[in-house]
Length: 127
Image 1: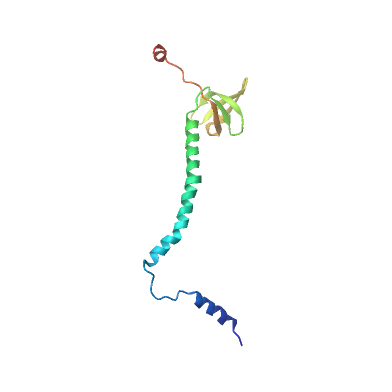
Image 2: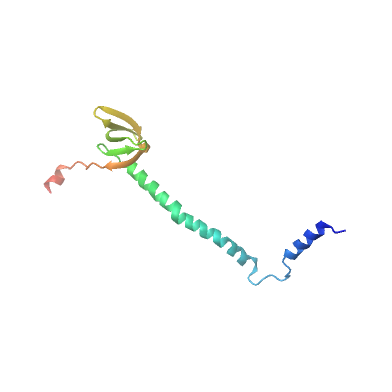
């Protein structure tokens, strides 16, 4: 009778490497070549996705640290306003309408619309 297990075992032996001698260059070369596509994919992801995102985050952090009184900002929630007061390191008071002021956390500022010019000193006016 035909044994089906023998059929599969024969196929497995046929797929095995029959050469008893290792190829020149050893297994290290073929292992490096198998990781090369993976390394290339990681490199492309780094260049196209990770690096630009890190730059954008750095710019956002610099912008948030440089906020000052009088700057016009947009919060992450889409509220437009003008910074009236800086309270501590992480809280801003933003005027969103005449007489309407709200406290917001500094990190919720999404973008800077207009930056106020620093006040000129008497030395700068004389020059």
